[in-house]
Length: 222
Ligand code: SF4
Image 1 (cartoon, protein in one colour):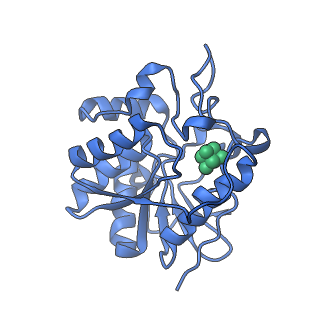
Image 2 (cartoon, rainbow, N blue to C red; image 1 turned 180 degrees about the horizontal axis):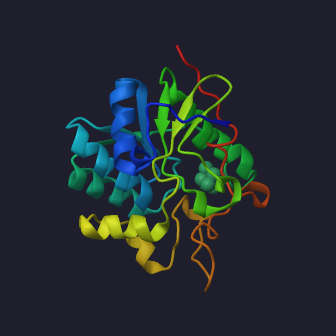
């Protein structure tokens, strides 16, 4: 995936909020919001809500989320006054017990491709400081099909995100206060050990650091 910074954007406007608002103006309804309900994604929804009274966002309900996460989805949607819609996978299909790769493909990658179908661009909360495949992350990326990922938090870190959440008194998933650094599906998330990075508690197939929505996704555009 290539970095592709629009020439119209100056360095100053690559700050999260101006970049996000530029993307909303530029793509309109062809810009998709999704959320894993992590603090970064919630910050972006809060910023989006300042620009528009009609913010719609998709949450991938894999069927394996913590009860706390599902309750948080409702609570934070109400707090932000945004619409968070669950995108369910097709019934049945593989589970993490047999094959984590196939489970993520069935419950995350395929439903996300469906949710993004017909869209031109997608807002992401990934940050370069999360390391792994995210190291060096650009603010704007374009794939071989022309689909664009907008990454307003690319150059921010977790403490910046936490400070934004605190400054605006935005609630967080209560599991983050119980020792989890990043919350995904319950069978594939563990609490952090001392000194571990925030995403170290996420468990993916083959010891990978990503579930596949940023590596195996192909988006069908009109
Ligand atoms: S994170 Fe685990 S439970 Fe969730 S979709 Fe992937 S393999 Fe399945």
